[in-house]
Structures are given as C-alpha cells and as structure tokens.
Length: 64
Image (spheres, rainbow, N blue to C red):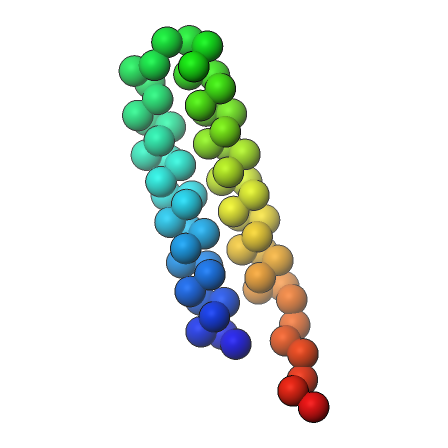
C-alpha cells in the first residue's frame, strides 16, 4: 500500500512543482490572462497538497 501512496504522492508533487514553474512562466502574459492562469495554478497546487494529505492520512483496510 505504501508503494501506491508513494507513486501517487510523487505524481501530485510533480503537479505542485510544475505549478511553481508555471507561475514564473505566466509573468509574460497580459494582466487578465495572468490573473486567470495564476488562479488556476494556485487552485491546482492546493488541491494536490490536500490530496497528498488525504492519501497519507487514510488508514489501509485489512484484507480479511
């Protein structure tokens, strides 16, 4: 179970890392697009971090 959690966490962490790079990349956009793009990036990062917390908070069920 921990291997699955680790793979899922790695994927979600990569989403957060790409959002950070996306934040810097959006600096070249005009103002309305900048605000919209950064809003989406922040929401994606927050959702990914929340998912990571839920993945590791959940206790595995017994296979009985």
